[in-house]
Amino acid sequence: MDSGHRQRTPRTPREKYGAELRLRRIAAELTQEALGEHVVCSPTLISHFEAGRRLPSPDDAQRIDRALGTDGFFARWLQDLDTKYADHFAAVAELEQQARLIQQFALSLVPGLLQTDDYARAVFRSYRANHRPEDLDRAVVIRTERARVLEGPDRPVLWTLLDEAVLRRRVGGGQVMAGQLHRIAELAEEGRLRLHVLPFGAGAHALMQSLLTLMSFEDAAPVAYVEGLLTGHLLDEPALVRESQTSYALALSDALSREESLALVRAAAEEHERGQQH
Image 1 (cartoon, rainbow, N blue to C red):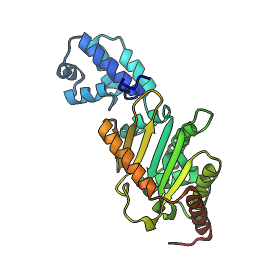
Image 2: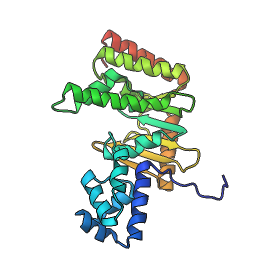
Image 3: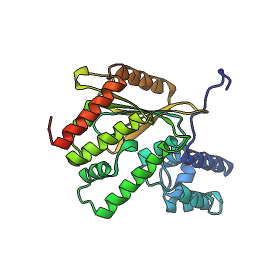
């Protein structure tokens, strides 16, 4: 690629949906405000649809089709885009499928791509006040399906940086936790991920305020993703992505070596198996 050509931001299916909606709205000579009146929603929500940040409901999509005279086009396309993920994470899950390099940092729990079924079930159970077994089963299956991106010859290069707190917090009991840590160690030993641990002894570090995922692509600009309770932010502004990359590099520089990290993960797994607490 010509070094003088600015790389595009990767487009997810929902962003393509939004771009097509914008083109059809402009062709119909409607403003966002005018389309919002037809759909019975705010112009801001139309803006979110067009930017790919939100998807319309099935009823909204039908009203869009009527307003634009698109004969069910957007309602039919929406069925293919109906996502099983939360709105703030749906685009991230799509981009994981395109990434050639994923660098993830976890502050307090094992990243979703690496979670075992038992660990994931314990995580989901912890924040659902009235959980039903079938709901937990579905959530675990969805998370397991995400991890398939790590299988096959075209899987992305995966770097995983874990705060030591991830190893020490006993999720699901000693045996579940031990199984989870052994799984991470096995993936590292097989060369399927590059593993580093930030020990408590490192003190303050550049990522101690948030989890972070960086994704790089063959034909698009890199992105960063940060997440908090019930919310997440996908960052594509070049300056913010560069700052996120710098923070990751700084934290990585404070981490243990691969060999030391693997030994610590294995030792923590054995401690959980013996029921020891920290």
